[in-house]
Length: 53
Image: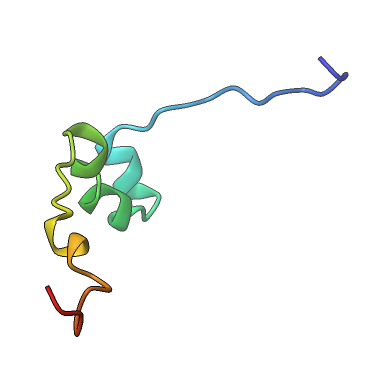
C-alpha cells in the first residue's frame, strides 16, 4: 500500500520494560488493562455557577 514499509509491532515484558527505563509506562499500565470508569457528574454543573435555578 503506497509502497511504504510498515514496521512490525512488538510487545515488551515487564522485565524488558524495566531494563529499557519505561518506569512510567509500567506504573500506568493499569489504565490499559482495566476498564476506566469516568464520573462526569461534576461537569454537568460546570458553567452553571451563578445562574438562577
